[in-house]
Length: 396
Ligand code: CUA
Image (cartoon, rainbow, N blue to C red):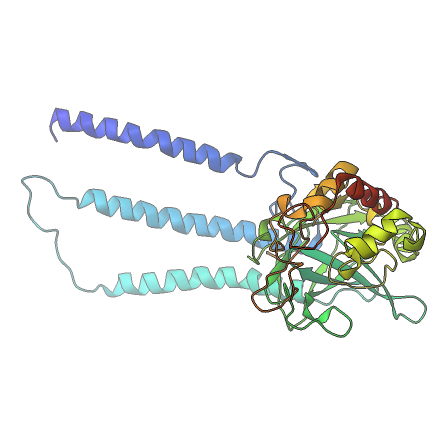
């Protein structure tokens, strides 16, 4: 190498260093930042807070070290070979050619096999651990994945065990107790069946990174997983399988609380509405007749699974819209007026003739009541939206 080419090589290297350092810095901070559950974004599977997540993390950490060691070895060997045998001006001799080497071939067969064998031991034992049945006193919850929000059904309630409570967005669980979670896509959740209806034909994935691993939610079958939180707190969940327009907004919260707080919450959810629709004055007319909210929602019966979220105890939640927004009057009014402007939904055609599910009609989610309103459908005023929000926010 001449002096000049060395210098050129040096400045090229320096040019590479800057982007490399920037990329490393970005990588190091990618999981940082603040979040609702403290440092981090509240979805860090490397900071497990539940038993299943702990088991997964205990497997992940040692396997990651093995993988990084193998990766560094391969990278170093590649760089070494590329530098050692690179082309040099004036040296056209080929490296010494060999064919076959029994000791080397035996080594590179046996060493990876041994590494895989070592990794397999904790992997298989973790798989069996995670598949263990939840305890006998486990709380039963059926989770229904809809487009794009989560419904939670607490089943097996009442003296005969045939009662249930339906809620959404916020999954309350008692601390220190296993929760058996049955996962369904929405096709089988409605009375009379709603087979393959709009929004019922895609796969979702239920994931609370700090509590447990991912589990797919598949139309036409029931999958199971379990949760257990030993400490009270709010744990963020997220749909982890691409499921359409608002997949990224398909969030939820797991609220773990002491058994007595949980019992009090569940008792409240089993009660009737704080305000009966018939007693809601003008809101009753708007909700039932003018805007036909009752086509998709109920505010009267917390045991029912309907097309949209059950709103009987909406005001007992701190968030709405799949946990995307804090439940405030201002946000709720905005949402009632024009939900698709807050979260992308395929609902512009919802009130066209033939909807929902008619030929060529896409209808998933809340319609806009202020724009794209098909001919003849009433447009909502802000005052009407406020009347509706006032009514809904009374439903503790
Ligand atoms: Cu549901 Cu992604």
